[in-house]
Length: 418
Picture 1 (cartoon, rainbow, N blue to C red):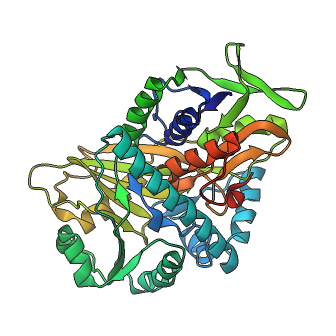
Picture 2 (picture 1 turned 90 degrees about the vertical axis):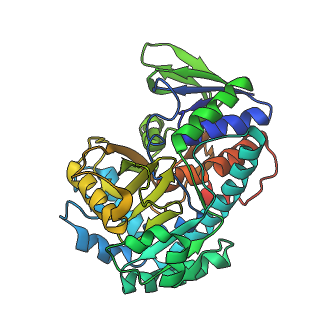
């Protein structure tokens, strides 16, 4: 089939690769001038199956109430007169029940494990280089209550196949010696040896190059204005200049912007943008920075070593489609980073650091939408991956390609159905 993939982030490009591998004629359309320039550009860099606990969990409602009004809080909810935001918030609360959290963790782990396997196969096959490190991910805790909360979650993930193993303080320091300089106490941690890290943008650019070599076409710098419908099917995509692009099937991989394209069709996708931030520190020779990727669950930030850079990213700000950079939140991230790793060698404040903000597409339970849209047999979604777009990209692309092609899937597609 002729297939249009809408969106050239890591999720869209991975989908294009697997669709082309399945024998389809693929074109990727994006408003950016090159692949991976929005949410995939400067994210946390983790391939983190161990980050499977959704934001919606039994402990979340009280935490959100505690954080209200705090400009530096890990999760900042800016109240707006937006019915979609409030409707999403109610769905979020419904996903906080323990049995829903358990189901969502299972769905996230299943897809993330499959994706990590697909990524390893793809890396070996194509000799991809994206500053990747296969040294695992260590979750560290400076608060005993946070550590105690993490232990049953880690046990549940082990039940579902993710080997997230509890570690003592001494074991944490042995896994990542740079933590010995920490100004924060370490009460314990959990370690997932098979998890990885790497630069999502470099991966997206390199995979797009391989896609092009495989015959995938890329159309950059075009604004999408809507989907054209004829006889109950999607007939094409209308562009800002009035032109239209046609195909046999269409894949919406536009991240946070997916609901805006679908709304005129009467499709109300429960997905909202959550702005995440990152600061990137250049590392001088001899800097005591981690080489194992680190997750600070309490502050909702992650650390990834990308060559001679340290990427520190995280937090969530629900503020609509605003992509402006709030320096106060960046300063809070940088301050926390230098508490954990004072030997990383940064200057005063944010000087010398690269600041970035991007919108992550979040569903109420953090489970993405992958599959055919009911009522339109040639319209597919691959969106809503939240903070785990890089983690789930290859598995999502493979699952989507199998569904489009009518092939047997490696995992049960039902939890991600639209």
